[in-house]
Length: 314
Length: 254
Ligand SMILES: Cc1cc2nc3c(=O)[nH]c(=O)nc-3n(C[C@H](O)[C@H](O)[C@H](O)COP(=O)(O)OP(=O)(O)OC[C@H]3O[C@@H](n4cnc5c(N)ncnc54)[C@H](O)[C@@H]3O)c2cc1C
Image (cartoon, rainbow over all chains, first blue to last red; front, side, top):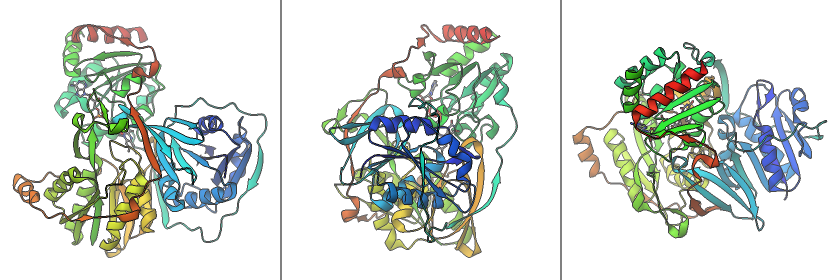
C-alpha cells in the first residue's frame, strides 16, 4: 500500500479542468502517482492524461456515457483494488462529492473533503480544510492502518505541466456486478435570461442585503453605472431574484473586468464563479469574511450605507 | 410513507475566536448554534410529501445534548418524532463516523426515504448523505432540486444539479438517501404554539456503539492568515469614501 491515486472525471468529453491541480498535490505527497479515469470513451481523453508527474494511467471502460455516480464509485473501487494506493485524491466537485464519501465508508478509508492543504508529517498524512464558514482551518490527521481518500478544493494548487507523452496505460476491468441503481432520464439546460457573461462590470449582492426591498437600490445603481446585477445563491433560493442572476458553481461563471461583491461571505461555491475576475472589490461588515481572500480592494462597511452614498453620487 | 430526515445543529463562529479542547476546536463560549439552513429545506420537503401521500416524518441528529434544539425546531415545523444519536467518542468532524452512527439509529426505523441537507454550513463536506447511503446499503442522489414520489411511494424521480446550472432528471427505487439543495421549497416555521409543544417532546437517545469510531482526528484548528497573504487595498474612511472609490474604479473600466 503506497503511492497516490488521482481520480478525475470526464465532463463533456474532457478531463475535469482541476486534474492538473490534483496531480501537483499528489506529487507533493510523495510516492508514485497514478491517474485514474473511468469513462465510456476513455481513448478520447488519453491525450489529456499526459501530465508531468504522472507515472501510470489506469482506465476503466464504462458501458454508458454521461455521469453516473454509482458506476463511477464501482470504477474507482476497482482502481483502488488494483493500484493499492495509500492516498486517493479527487477534486471537490459536485460529481466527485456524489460518491466520494460513500466509497470511503464502503472501504473503511480515512476521509476528508474540501481539503486545501495536504502533506506528510513523520509518515502521517495531514490534511487542512476550512470549517465554520472558512473562518477557521482544521488540521486533520488519519489513522495509518488504512488508505485515506480526500477531495481537494479546486483553484488551490498550481497546475502541473503538460508532459510530452502520456504515461503507460493499464486497463482495469469492471466486474459484471457493477450496476447502477440510478437511471438517467434527461438533462435540462440552465436557465436563460440576463447575460452576465458579457458584462464588463458586475455588482453582486449577497445575503448582506437583508431584505428583498433593498435589492432594488443595488439594481438601480448597477443600471446607472452600466453594470450587470449578480447575486449569491441564497437570494435566488428565496425567490428575491431570478436564477439567471446567480453567480457561482451552480450558476454562471463570470470573469468581468470588475466584480463588486456586496455582502457576500465568499463561500467556495460563490468563489468558483467569480474568482477569475480581473479586479474584485468586496464590501462586508465582517473583516474576516473569506471574500477578502480573493479581493483586490476591500472595505469593512454596511452595504446599505454604501448604497445610499452611491445613489447620492450618481 | 415513512421519511427520515437527518439534521444538524451547526456551529456558527463570530469574527474573533479563541480555541479550547487543547487547540482542537473553537471554544464553545465564542460560538452560537442553530439548525443547519439546508436541513430546513430537507424537513420541509419531507413534510410536503407526508402531507400529500400520508405517513410519518422522523428527524434524527447525531449530536451532543445541545443538538436537541435542532430536533425541537423540526418538531415545531411538523415532524412527528425525533431521535438523537450520541456517544462521547463520536467526532462531529468525521462525516463517515457520523453517517454510521445515523445509520445505526435509522436501520431500526425501516424508512422508505431518507433526506439530508446538501451540506452543513460548518463542515461543508457534502458527505454525510452519500456515506449514510453506503452504510444503509441503499442508493443516493445528491444536490436534489426537485423530488417526486411515484408509483405509490416506491419510486422516486429526482432532479439534481451540477456545475454551471446543468440539471439532470434521474429515477430510482426507494429506499434511498436524497441530499436536498437549498431553494427547492419554502421552509415553514412552527407557530408559537407548536414551538411550545415541541419543547415538551420526548426525544430518545440512541448509542451507536462502535459505529461512531473515527479514523480521523483533529490535530488542531487555527485562524488562516487574513487575505490569504495577498496584497489588498482596504478603503479608509466611511461609506462616502467607499462609494467614491467604487465609482472611480468603475469609471476606470470605461
Ligand atoms: C452544491 C452547492 C452549490 C452551490 N452553488 C452556489 C452558487 O452557484 N452560488 C452561490 O453564491 N452560492 C452557492 N452555494 C451556496 C454557498 O455555499 C453559500 O451558502 C452562499 O454563497 C452564501 O451566500 P452569501 O455569501 O450571500 O451569504 P452568507 O454566507 O450568509 O454571507 C452574508 C455576508 O454578508 C455580510 N453582511 C451581512 N450584513 C451586512 C451588511 N449590512 N453590510 C455588509 N455586509 C453584510 C456577512 O458578514 C456575511 O459575510 C452552493 C452550495 C452548494 C452546497
